[in-house]
Image (cartoon, rainbow, N blue to C red):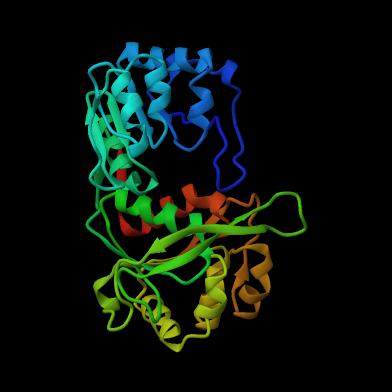
Length: 334
């Protein structure tokens, strides 16, 4: 499938790879409408509305989340259709003729024929599952248990995107943090390159942990994921974290680490003789840790060395997740 990205996200600078006018809608199998503030003004653009109508009239898949259904309401394609969205949109979607499904949680999704709607980003795992299924996709090998090693001010997208992707694939995913328990949260940070000498840093979402770190049974998990951000710098000082990482590496279970996460790997002494990449600012940690440095060129490039997957930045998530999937034996076929 050919997937094109045509707008900008709120958390980070989002690069477009096509202009709206050059896209031939007939060549695509599905239309995905993200939420945020954008749908409020996109719903006033007749070209956007015609796009939604074309997909609706052709019976092709339409997936819209959060404020995204506003565009569908303005296009007049929601009459009699079951849908949900961010709760505040209920009245306007009802006025548009939709069969409004009141969300019970922020993770709710609704599927009605070729229309899939979700409440907010927390619904992504089920939302993505429904999209894959609607497109005829089949997921195999997903009976895996994945552990995420989290900490305060880890990079927002580097924990949420891989975690939600793995859940969408059907994996059981737990997120833990030293000295914290299930239900506690870790504040996250948003990092982006905006023309300065280094990346900028802004507040992200509060990330809710799903399991308690103390008493954790590492042997019950099939893989370990280490997000980047600020957290690896102090996680690398925790002896229990070092022991956990060594356990996974010595057992040769898949370990996937991105951006600054390789600081933890270096501190654990598990990079000796390995090949890996990382955020360029972490190159010194990788080299002094005994690894062969692999240049992340382009920055989204990820590498697999035996049981170890490493990436340099959140822009590498497609490669990062797919390479971890390969190690775990997870496949998506259409």
